[in-house]
Length: 248
Image (cartoon, rainbow, N blue to C red):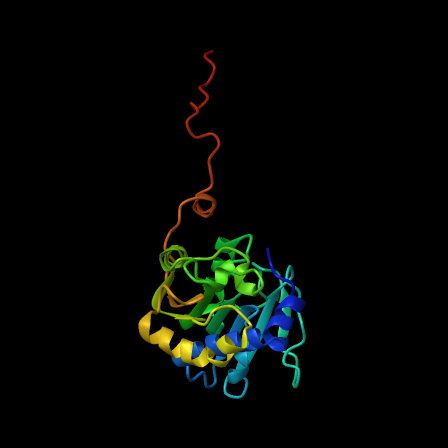
């Protein structure tokens, strides 16, 4: 179940808690990827709040938004970089993204395996992907007043196993949103302190979101099921005896 783009925009740009969450997740992302000079950066879901720092240095920034969610013009103060697309059919060439950020996309997808296949297709072999999902063990996944309270929360093991199946190999992981998901002034004012303390204590259990960085395995690992069957189409007559000529 995808959230509506208007609800996401309201949370991240018009509430104090949303702006605090935006800052905390973005700072962790920038610690992983401080430099994207002359690179193509793609976001999927609602990654817009994280992409703004890359607008000046990246060669190209593209914000993909699934049709079930809806799209909004972004950025507000420049040429529009948002694109409405099918969740599992992106208008991008294969191997075209140096960096790929997925937020509010995987946990809400009705077809997560197909979505990850599309992520694999678009990411360059030497590129990096970053998947940001609600932490099953965190407080934010239990609060449906924030976007992280919707969809399927993940444990670190669940997320990494799902990514490996597709051929997206986890390299690093961090957590964010160590402050409680509340708009009480004390917690908002001390948010940076909780984020700093949380990163020192735990990068796995306490944070509200998990952030897993991946690289692309080439070639992709074989997978059983329909895709393999398509590569080896069924021969419907296999197992039947061949017709014999009628004796004269």
